[in-house]
Length: 336
Image (cartoon, rainbow, N blue to C red; front, side, top):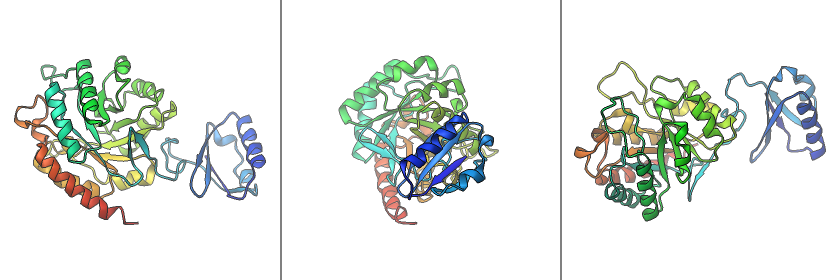
């Protein structure tokens, strides 16, 4: 349930309402917007007499929330969330550009790519240390050493780092990681999501291969219910009957999520298409549709990459792409 307060109110009135609501065994989440204050009521709200609350002179409106996700719901938080990562932000009209290799392979490789993507305008560095692979015989990542190499690249470039976690037991290894990525296969690993909810780190939550938008938002709710509101949603393509691309990029999720949630939305055209030549056009379309950012795979030698070389851009191609998407973003952000 949501209670919208009028601007003309005093602290004593609100305090009395809060005390009464809490006496019913409910929790309250306050959202202070630019023009109004919203009280989000969590718990068994059937105990609340809506007509009684509406009759209060300092209450503008009362609404029941039908969706099972509350913290992630735009009704609870009308204004877009802005997630701070180091000296950069995700959301709020900015365009986050996250780039780097699928896998960290060596110090020379990750540092060279980090320098090149930063020169092209990237705001964060991505790189896989732990790699979930379909085949148990494929390269699984450098694990702890991979994180150490990402931190060296961060030290050299100043770029915040984004890397994927696969298991609760690895959380301590991510102390110095700026953004923890939850991959598509772990989107509904609820025990992991609960633990990430106890941290204060930004979480990049990828949509599952066959998951609905509502299921994605419920996974975000698991993290937020634990107290961590720094969640960034990521569309990385869903599984359909099409075989020309690796997955099917669902760009319609951008307007759909905009209506449903206040959380920022990142698009991953690399995993969605699986084909490097398709990445630029899908990136253009994503930014035109209003995405808050892109996460793109870049490798200095895609032909010899240990993981997903076919979908990785070269540094020169990425440099060209960043100029294009920045130009599109400068136009789109002026639209109402």
